[in-house]
Length: 210
Image (cartoon, rainbow, N blue to C red):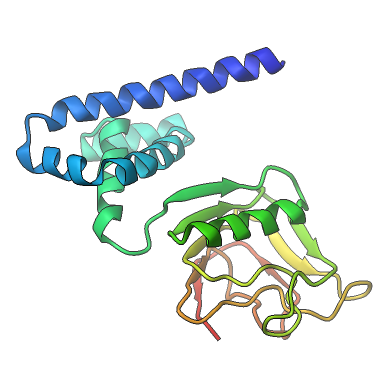
Protein backbone atom coordinates (compact mmCIF):
# COMPACT_ATOMS: atom_id res chain seq x y z
CA UNK A 1 0.00 0.00 0.00
CA UNK A 2 2.81 2.39 0.92
CA UNK A 3 4.63 1.59 -2.32
CA UNK A 4 1.45 2.30 -4.33
CA UNK A 5 0.98 5.62 -2.52
CA UNK A 6 4.55 6.64 -3.34
CA UNK A 7 4.03 5.74 -7.02
CA UNK A 8 0.84 7.80 -7.17
CA UNK A 9 2.58 10.73 -5.53
CA UNK A 10 5.48 10.49 -7.97
CA UNK A 11 3.06 10.31 -10.90
CA UNK A 12 1.21 13.39 -9.64
CA UNK A 13 4.43 15.37 -9.24
CA UNK A 14 5.67 14.29 -12.67
CA UNK A 15 2.38 15.37 -14.26
CA UNK A 16 2.54 18.80 -12.62
CA UNK A 17 6.15 19.30 -13.68
CA UNK A 18 5.33 18.32 -17.26
CA UNK A 19 2.37 20.71 -17.35
CA UNK A 20 4.52 23.55 -15.98
CA UNK A 21 7.24 22.93 -18.57
CA UNK A 22 4.64 22.97 -21.33
CA UNK A 23 3.44 26.37 -20.18
CA UNK A 24 7.03 27.67 -20.05
CA UNK A 25 7.59 26.49 -23.62
CA UNK A 26 4.46 28.28 -24.82
CA UNK A 27 5.38 31.42 -22.86
CA UNK A 28 8.69 31.64 -24.72
CA UNK A 29 6.71 32.80 -27.75
CA UNK A 30 5.04 35.60 -25.79
CA UNK A 31 7.45 38.32 -24.54
CA UNK A 32 4.96 39.71 -22.01
CA UNK A 33 4.23 36.32 -20.51
CA UNK A 34 7.88 35.33 -20.56
CA UNK A 35 8.77 38.49 -18.62
CA UNK A 36 6.01 37.81 -16.07
CA UNK A 37 7.25 34.27 -15.51
CA UNK A 38 10.81 35.52 -15.18
CA UNK A 39 9.88 38.08 -12.52
CA UNK A 40 7.36 36.00 -10.59
CA UNK A 41 8.46 32.45 -11.38
CA UNK A 42 8.75 31.03 -7.83
CA UNK A 43 5.45 32.55 -6.66
CA UNK A 44 3.69 31.53 -9.84
CA UNK A 45 4.99 27.97 -9.65
CA UNK A 46 3.71 27.58 -6.10
CA UNK A 47 0.28 28.82 -7.10
CA UNK A 48 0.32 26.87 -10.36
CA UNK A 49 0.85 23.62 -8.45
CA UNK A 50 -1.98 24.41 -6.02
CA UNK A 51 -4.44 25.36 -8.77
CA UNK A 52 -3.42 22.47 -11.04
CA UNK A 53 -4.05 19.94 -8.29
CA UNK A 54 -7.38 21.51 -7.44
CA UNK A 55 -8.46 21.39 -11.06
CA UNK A 56 -7.36 17.76 -11.36
CA UNK A 57 -9.64 16.90 -8.44
CA UNK A 58 -12.68 18.09 -10.41
CA UNK A 59 -14.93 15.45 -11.93
CA UNK A 60 -14.35 14.49 -15.56
CA UNK A 61 -17.65 16.18 -16.44
CA UNK A 62 -16.66 19.48 -14.84
CA UNK A 63 -13.22 19.34 -16.44
CA UNK A 64 -14.77 18.68 -19.85
CA UNK A 65 -17.12 21.63 -19.45
CA UNK A 66 -14.31 23.91 -18.37
CA UNK A 67 -12.05 22.94 -21.27
CA UNK A 68 -14.90 23.24 -23.77
CA UNK A 69 -15.99 26.64 -22.47
CA UNK A 70 -12.53 28.19 -22.05
CA UNK A 71 -10.67 26.32 -24.75
CA UNK A 72 -7.77 25.76 -22.34
CA UNK A 73 -5.83 22.78 -21.14
CA UNK A 74 -5.69 22.11 -17.41
CA UNK A 75 -2.17 23.51 -17.33
CA UNK A 76 -3.16 26.69 -19.15
CA UNK A 77 -6.14 27.19 -16.85
CA UNK A 78 -3.95 26.66 -13.78
CA UNK A 79 -1.41 29.17 -15.09
CA UNK A 80 -4.17 31.68 -15.80
CA UNK A 81 -5.45 31.35 -12.24
CA UNK A 82 -1.90 31.56 -10.89
CA UNK A 83 -1.18 34.72 -12.88
CA UNK A 84 -4.35 36.38 -11.68
CA UNK A 85 -3.14 35.79 -8.13
CA UNK A 86 0.03 37.80 -8.70
CA UNK A 87 -1.79 41.10 -8.86
CA UNK A 88 -5.23 40.39 -7.38
CA UNK A 89 -5.73 40.13 -3.60
CA UNK A 90 -7.60 37.17 -2.20
CA UNK A 91 -5.94 34.45 -4.24
CA UNK A 92 -5.01 31.08 -2.81
CA UNK A 93 -1.35 30.43 -2.18
CA UNK A 94 -1.76 27.06 -0.52
CA UNK A 95 -4.49 24.53 0.22
CA UNK A 96 -4.70 22.67 3.53
CA UNK A 97 -7.06 19.67 3.37
CA UNK A 98 -8.51 18.21 6.58
CA UNK A 99 -8.74 14.53 5.72
CA UNK A 100 -10.55 13.11 8.74
CA UNK A 101 -13.86 13.75 10.47
CA UNK A 102 -13.64 15.77 13.72
CA UNK A 103 -9.87 16.19 13.39
CA UNK A 104 -9.81 19.43 15.37
CA UNK A 105 -6.01 19.33 15.95
CA UNK A 106 -5.47 19.19 12.17
CA UNK A 107 -7.85 22.13 11.68
CA UNK A 108 -6.00 24.15 14.31
CA UNK A 109 -2.65 23.29 12.72
CA UNK A 110 -3.95 24.26 9.28
CA UNK A 111 -5.09 27.69 10.53
CA UNK A 112 -1.74 28.26 12.23
CA UNK A 113 0.18 27.29 9.09
CA UNK A 114 -2.03 29.50 6.92
CA UNK A 115 -1.48 32.41 9.28
CA UNK A 116 2.28 31.83 9.29
CA UNK A 117 2.87 32.13 5.54
CA UNK A 118 1.10 35.52 5.44
CA UNK A 119 -0.51 34.76 2.08
CA UNK A 120 -4.11 33.93 1.09
CA UNK A 121 -4.81 30.24 1.66
CA UNK A 122 -7.62 27.69 1.49
CA UNK A 123 -8.61 25.20 4.19
CA UNK A 124 -10.78 22.33 2.95
CA UNK A 125 -12.85 20.67 5.65
CA UNK A 126 -13.61 16.96 5.58
CA UNK A 127 -16.79 16.60 3.50
CA UNK A 128 -19.88 16.20 5.66
CA UNK A 129 -17.81 16.03 8.85
CA UNK A 130 -18.48 17.55 12.26
CA UNK A 131 -15.70 19.33 14.14
CA UNK A 132 -16.65 19.67 17.81
CA UNK A 133 -14.73 22.18 19.92
CA UNK A 134 -14.54 21.39 23.64
CA UNK A 135 -11.61 23.48 24.90
CA UNK A 136 -10.22 26.94 24.17
CA UNK A 137 -7.25 27.29 21.83
CA UNK A 138 -6.58 30.85 22.99
CA UNK A 139 -8.00 33.75 24.98
CA UNK A 140 -6.72 36.60 22.82
CA UNK A 141 -10.19 38.12 22.38
CA UNK A 142 -11.99 35.98 24.91
CA UNK A 143 -12.00 32.18 24.82
CA UNK A 144 -11.92 30.85 21.25
CA UNK A 145 -11.93 27.24 20.14
CA UNK A 146 -9.82 27.90 17.03
CA UNK A 147 -6.76 30.11 16.48
CA UNK A 148 -7.22 33.80 15.74
CA UNK A 149 -7.39 34.39 11.99
CA UNK A 150 -4.57 36.82 11.18
CA UNK A 151 -4.30 36.39 7.40
CA UNK A 152 -6.66 35.85 4.47
CA UNK A 153 -8.12 32.36 4.72
CA UNK A 154 -10.94 30.74 2.76
CA UNK A 155 -12.60 27.81 4.51
CA UNK A 156 -14.25 25.38 2.11
CA UNK A 157 -16.99 23.80 4.21
CA UNK A 158 -17.92 20.89 1.90
CA UNK A 159 -21.08 20.31 3.95
CA UNK A 160 -19.14 20.10 7.22
CA UNK A 161 -20.12 21.58 10.59
CA UNK A 162 -17.96 23.35 13.17
CA UNK A 163 -19.70 23.23 16.55
CA UNK A 164 -19.13 23.80 20.23
CA UNK A 165 -19.90 21.18 22.86
CA UNK A 166 -22.46 23.25 24.77
CA UNK A 167 -22.93 20.66 27.51
CA UNK A 168 -19.42 19.46 28.33
CA UNK A 169 -17.11 22.05 26.78
CA UNK A 170 -15.95 25.55 27.68
CA UNK A 171 -18.12 28.58 26.94
CA UNK A 172 -16.22 29.86 23.94
CA UNK A 173 -16.38 31.46 20.54
CA UNK A 174 -15.70 29.25 17.55
CA UNK A 175 -13.08 31.68 16.22
CA UNK A 176 -12.11 35.34 16.07
CA UNK A 177 -10.60 37.41 13.28
CA UNK A 178 -7.73 39.80 13.92
CA UNK A 179 -7.99 43.34 12.65
CA UNK A 180 -7.07 43.68 8.94
CA UNK A 181 -7.37 39.92 8.43
CA UNK A 182 -10.07 38.33 6.30
CA UNK A 183 -11.70 34.96 6.72
CA UNK A 184 -13.90 33.80 3.87
CA UNK A 185 -15.98 30.87 4.95
CA UNK A 186 -18.21 28.99 2.55
CA UNK A 187 -20.77 28.52 5.29
CA UNK A 188 -23.73 30.51 6.60
CA UNK A 189 -22.71 33.68 8.52
CA UNK A 190 -19.74 32.84 10.70
CA UNK A 191 -20.44 32.04 14.37
CA UNK A 192 -17.72 34.34 15.65
CA UNK A 193 -19.85 35.56 18.54
CA UNK A 194 -21.47 33.50 21.29
CA UNK A 195 -24.93 33.61 19.78
CA UNK A 196 -24.47 30.54 17.58
CA UNK A 197 -23.14 27.13 18.46
CA UNK A 198 -22.39 25.80 14.99
CA UNK A 199 -22.21 26.59 11.31
CA UNK A 200 -23.32 24.14 8.65
CA UNK A 201 -21.56 24.60 5.34
CA UNK A 202 -23.53 26.12 2.52
CA UNK A 203 -23.47 29.64 1.09
CA UNK A 204 -20.42 31.85 1.07
CA UNK A 205 -19.93 34.61 3.63
CA UNK A 206 -17.16 36.87 4.84
CA UNK A 207 -16.30 37.30 8.51
CA UNK A 208 -15.28 40.87 9.24
CA UNK A 209 -12.62 41.64 11.82
CA UNK A 210 -13.75 42.57 15.29
